[in-house]
Image (tube, rainbow, N blue to C red; front, side, top):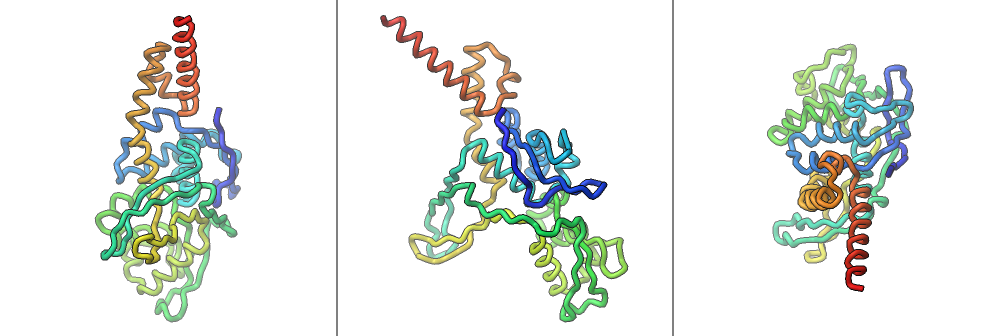
Length: 296
């Protein structure tokens, strides 16, 4: 079995306060490839939860990994696992096209990078709760803030809202992550909306500072206009797009193996891409051998 072993940049903290970071990750099966290929953008977070639960066979002492645990993983940990799944499925190199964001240019730009070169930053403090003090300039009477970091459950909830109302999605996210403002522990969206813009900004900056990071923003220079810009690499959409592009090949591989070996679709779809293609190569070699023997 193709298994990748590694450590999450953050980690899952269980009810006893134990941190689980070491994981074992298995490759996508054909069923998982098909599921992600058919995903709509608004349901990508929930599908990532399902795929993590299916592909992470061990997380620290937790085995198997339930969807509940996958949903509670930090955003950066989920990104890291998805990045490794992409690497196991399509290899180290990423080739993509984007367009220069400057209106006077807009030329197509090709990017090429190695997944192993993506910067990953481990969190130094593991939480689960963090504390900060707002500056006096933030203008809040209650300056002590306690918060947790965003996780998969937050992503699932706010993803459908984000496309329609980014401000509302952010207010909801902060209401979920902030656990205490002064002595108030029942945080609602209205309390977040009542915070000054500077107070909200300070909280957002501190959350980003202490969180583990998978750096998916790339500094680039347009070869046409020579201007510099930052290109966000949308891992979810890119990976799912690659799977959609490869879905026809997946079905052809299933047909090829089913036709020659008389295996069921379920049996073949339960295989990883690596195992499917090993059988295809063996079969192709055998067919070539038989054809050559007939010519002798």
